[in-house]
Image (cartoon, rainbow, N blue to C red; front, side, top):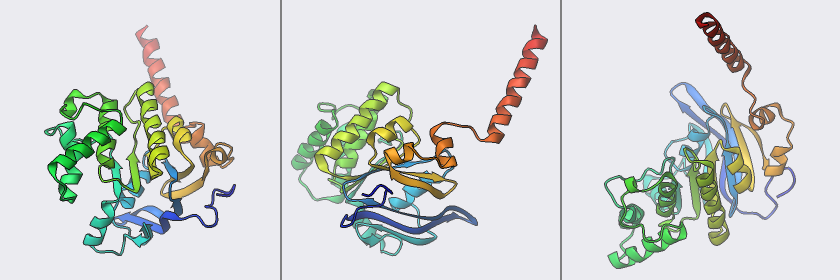
Length: 277
C-alpha cells in the first residue's frame, strides 16, 4: 500500500465496495461508500453510534441488501447473486457477533460444531476433532462441555470466535469484539485477533469504536460518519490526520449541541444542589 492508504499495485482485493448505498424505507443510511479490503489485511471500521458502521457490516455479510452500488466478496457481486450462491460464499465467511450470540441451550462444543453439522457431511468423530482444535486455537481447550452461562464475558467472545473459525473461513468479521469487556480481557481478545491473523493470514474486518483496540490490530482503518467515508488509510496516517471529523472522533470531542445539553444539565444539577443546602 502507498502512503495514501490505497492498495499497492498487484494486490488482490478480497472485498470491493463501489458507490454502495443502503436505505431503510425513504431514509438512506449509507451514501455511496467505496473502498477495498485486501487479501490478508485487517481493516477496522470506525464510527460513532448512528454512523452507519453496523449497517455496513450487515451488508458486507449479506444480511442487508444494498439499494444500489456494488459489493464484491471473493470476486462476486453479492447484490446480484442467487440465494444458493450467497450460501456458498457464506461458507467461507466467519462472523463473531457482538456479545457472542451463543445458543444458551447448547454446550460450547455444540455451538462451535453447529456450522459443521449444518453445512458439511463430516462424520461426528471428525467434527469432534475439529471443534476441539478450534477451541484450542482460541485458548478454550477443555471447555467443550461447558454451557455458555458458565463462561465469563471474555470466554464467550473466544467461544464465538471458535465457532466463526469452524469452517476455516477466508474472511472473518468481528462486531464490537471488545464491547462490555474490562480492559484486561479486551486486550486478550485483541491479542487473539493478532494471533489469528499471523497464523492463518485471513482477511479480517473489525467494526468497533474502541480506539485502543483499533490502533493495535488494524493495518488500515476507515472512519464512517453519517453514512459517508470520512477517511481511510494506515493507522499512523489517521492518527496524524487534520481532518476535523477525524480529529473530533480521535480526540473525543463532543458535538456542540451535546456539549450544550451537558452544560445545561450540569447547571440544573448545581442549582438543585444549592437549593438543597
